[in-house]
Each structure stands twice: as C-alpha cells, then as structure tokens.
Amino acid sequence: MFNAEIPSRAELPSTAKLVKSTIVAAVAALVILVTIVLPAEYAIDPTGIGRALKLTDMGEIKKQIAIEAEIDRQRDRQQAPAATPERRSSVAGLLAGLLVSPASAHPGGHDDDATNQVTPSPSPTTEVAQPAAGAKTDEVVFTLKPNEGVEYKMTMLRGAVTQFSWRVDGGKVNYDMHGTPKTGGKESSYKKGTAVASDTGALTAAYDGSHGWFWRNRGSSDVTVTLKVTGTYSEIKRMN
Image (tube, rainbow, N blue to C red; front, side):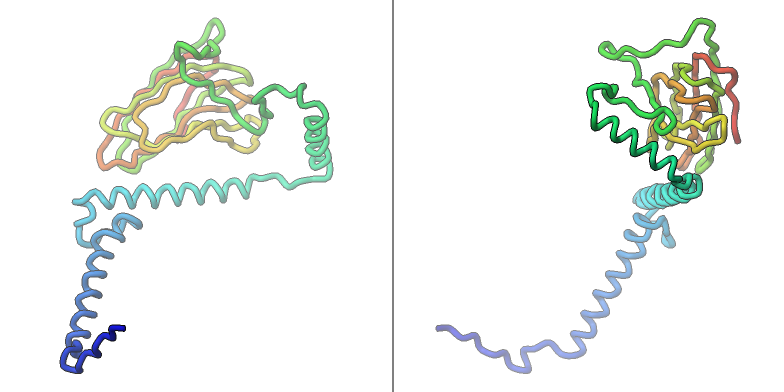
C-alpha cells in the first residue's frame, strides 16, 4: 500500500500567501458582483460596465416584472370579494352539476364574469367572429418615451366584437389587454406580453364595460405605436 508523504512545513504555503490569495479572491468576487450580478439582477450599475454589456437592461426588465407582479397581487387581494354562504352554496351547486352531467357542459366554456375571452387572430384554419354591420373604425398613433405607459380603452357591450391590430415602430413594448366591468367589478386581463412588436386578432367583450390595452416602453429610446380597430363600440379614448 502506498502512503503519501506528509509535506514539510517549508512546502506548505505561508500565512502571507494565504492572506494574499484570500484578498485576491475577495476582490475578484466584488468586481463580479458590481459589474455583472448587480446590473443583471437589480439594474444597479455604478460603473457603467453593465450598461455597456446590455446587462442593466436585463435587470430593469426583471425589476419591472417583479414590481408589476406585486401590484397585480395587491390589486387582486384588495378587489377579491369576501366569500358568503350564498356564494359558496352556488359554487358548490355548480360543481355538483358539472360532476353529475359533464356532457351538458360546453367544451372549453367559462363563466363570462370570471374569465374574458380573446378570439385568436385570423388564419386559414381559424374562423374569427366578425363585427356587426355598422361597425366603427378608428386609428390612433402615439409615441412612448422610455418607461412611459399609455392606456386606450373602448366602451363595449357584452358580446360586441372588435377586430384590432397594432404595431410598434422603433422597438418593442410590454402590454396588457384587459377589460373593466361597467358595474365597477374586478378588472380582468385578456392576455399579456413582454417585448412584443405587434399583435392582431378579435376582442369579444365578455361584459358591458371598457376594454382595451395598456402599453409600456421598457426600451432606451422612443417608440411609436399605431393601433387600428374596427368593431361595435361606442367610443375609444385615452385613459391616462
């Protein structure tokens, strides 16, 4: 059996060398933290290197997504109605009815008051609901500065259909297509997107109220958004 020889004291690194190596490792870790980790994770860039490497943009997006997610959670908690015995009974009855006769449920159906529907954009294999006769047509064009947000909404009745298309010139945006009931109920989101350059489709109002989009420019330069709508709505206006 081979036994390794124990190194002599002279062969071991000195205390000074160990201290020097520790200091070098600590400095290297600090440099990585300041130039890479902080810009990429928290959009903190004291040296400017993160901006040059495009890491700060990543951190700003992560930070904004976290902020908006927390705002959504706070809003949902504030707007969530308290469960009453009558409501619990009605929900239990609905679930019991679905379990007893599942064939009577419409495939893929949802409660219009709970979930909004967005019709997919037209394609050769997808039939999209068309606006009724006498539909209105509008086009709006606006510019978003970096970190600026704009909201446009249409006043629509339940079941009304609006065809839409929008595009971004000069960059991409984050957006939230949503609706707010006329009666002041809980706002609900149709769909959301991050770093999107365009979208098209048909929006069917699930209830009487205002329905539309909120766009925010998270880029570093101005962008121009062009929105075109054709459908059965009474008006379209900027909300902020």
